[in-house]
Amino acid sequence: MLLMSHRGGHQESKKKLEISPSETMKAEEENYKEEAKEPKSEDWRPPSVFGAADLKNRAVGLYNIGQTCCLNSLLQVFLMNIHFTKILRRISVPVCATQKKKNVPYQMLLLLEKMQCGKQKAVSPRELVLCLEAHRVTMFVQYDAAQLFLTLWNLLKKQMKNPELVEKLSDLYTISVQEHLACQICSSETKRNSSMLSLPVPLLDSDSSMLKTLSVKLVHLPQTLTIHLKRFCFGRSAYIHKISNCLPFPQDLDFNAVLTEQQCQAYDNEKAAWRYELFAVVAHSGTTSYGHYCAYIRSLTECKWYCFNDSFVEQVSWDDVKSTYGHSDLYWGQTAYLLFYMKKQPQ
Image (cartoon, rainbow, N blue to C red):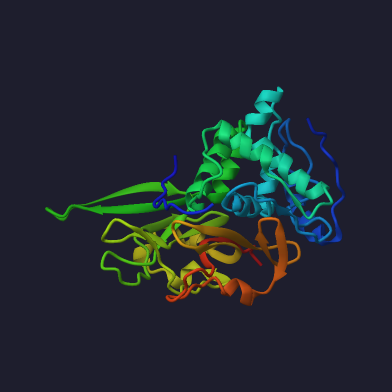
């Protein structure tokens, strides 16, 4: 089980169809030429479409079937990531019907194909929701997006039987860090390496002052980097409250420019690849007791931003994405909660 920090208390038999890639996907097909040279496992299946919104430039929403806005937002982030769907399309299909109903990767693949093959503006995630309930994931309740993201990822990793795919999934999302523990009595310091799915960034320190630094040393950053903005914290009365302070985030992020040597424990060749561009933002609106999630995602084939708000999907601008920076006087407006950055391809 990967490390995760904070949990808040707020919202939220089919035949495989072969589809020809649209014109917007020609550039992505080049990425497969090198991969095609590698030996394929027995359960490998050729990719047809790369992302949920990349079929004829039409984005597809997900119906909210009862406080599922958090799940819907995370599913869109997963399925719009072409590096994730390349892994998903290589899973082994379960043999019997019972196993299919309880297999999270398979149900996610079915949902992806339903989104790509249908002509509706939105589809229902009902089968996947039932699958998650079979694994004791409580649904139809308000969720913390960071916690649910970890739950989904752990189920995906656990149920992918192919060790090669498990390794690829880990390489895609897992962050390696070095933690430093200091004894308050003798001042001796110990170090330990650990892994996490999201990089937690507290907005406040122990004195409730704005925090702008990391508390761990980075060793390895994945292809898709998840940053968890800790907007929910305990107050002095043990009451969880939301921090809506403004925290700007860039479209392009070069960790070599923002980290000090004390915050980095990586080799030079590793650090050379730490250049990222923003891929998605999961935003929360409302309070800790009642709220709503939506996702802003940049299509990797069109390079256009979309807002996925359950069944409603629309193209938006970068200014719309920036509206999730937050504001100290903000009560109901959207604030960024999870940031997903994708590694830039070397020139």
